[in-house]
Image (tube, rainbow, N blue to C red):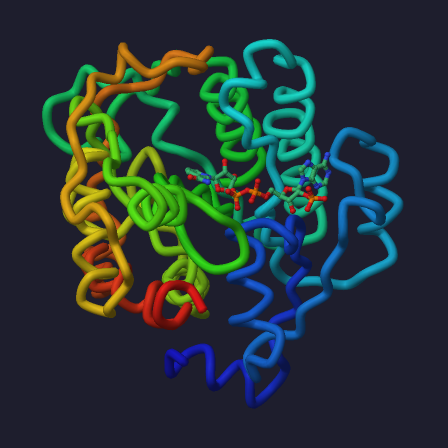
Length: 312
Ligand SMILES: NC(=O)c1ccc[n+]([C@@H]2O[C@H](COP(=O)([O-])OP(=O)(O)OC[C@H]3O[C@@H](n4cnc5c(N)ncnc54)[C@H](OP(=O)(O)O)[C@@H]3O)[C@@H](O)[C@H]2O)c1
């Protein structure tokens, strides 16, 4: 715990409302902060607070006192959003805008999450917060609209762009790679798409650092916007190789140790267009907090070792 936060903890824990606690990211916050002496966590499930119902948002929140609202809830089905753009907009844009207004009116801070899919992928280096968003998909557009709604309500709110999330609680890319490698002799993975894996377990600590009392929103035209990922950038193929290397070191019974490259264009079933290069630059977070996210390969080793050998 940071010094600043521990001194607040001595006075009163920070009262946090968590939305989306059953999801991959939200579960990481629930596990990290439920027993944390610096936080008093109050979770709302989708049944208690459905983001598609504005009146329910207001009714649920007016009954609780809180300092911070962590919105880890979102419509995250990238391909389905192409056929359900209104639902994606309701959950990812309209609801966060309402949440941001409610938080600003009550002097609370909203911690909202966004995505690398707000970018079009034409940038050759990792994206900075100052780079222009140009989403290619309905999902990306809904998240970008949500960012703008939150930013308009208050520069004190945090908008944190993540990418390629993995972690306990919900299967993601590493689990798919491992299933393929254990049961098949071949793992075919896209080699012409680059990004930044992010370990969900690391995110609450990064957010804690950004929320530390006395640490105001950063300077500049994007005060509350930060890119938060584990480095360095990699292709999906390199990501899969990192998963297999970590699993091999733990003695997993792999039938395939090296993935085979395929082109993104050859993948069936992808309705939404995805950026080919959407790695995120975390320098701004490091400048603001002094923290440097650890390499994703180190995080992957921890993730797999938590599961035990062969996920047992
Ligand atoms: N996953 C990634 O690779 C990735 C990459 C970049 C950014 N992000 C961002 O990170 C954040 C968290 O993503 P995630 O992968 O953890 O999501 P997730 O696992 O799909 O979880 C989403 C959560 O949102 C809740 N939710 C969905 N619709 C809702 C509604 N109408 N009302 C209330 N709650 C609702 C879900 O509730 P139920 O449990 O009831 O379904 C679930 O708890 C999102 O902002 C996402 O855009 C994710």
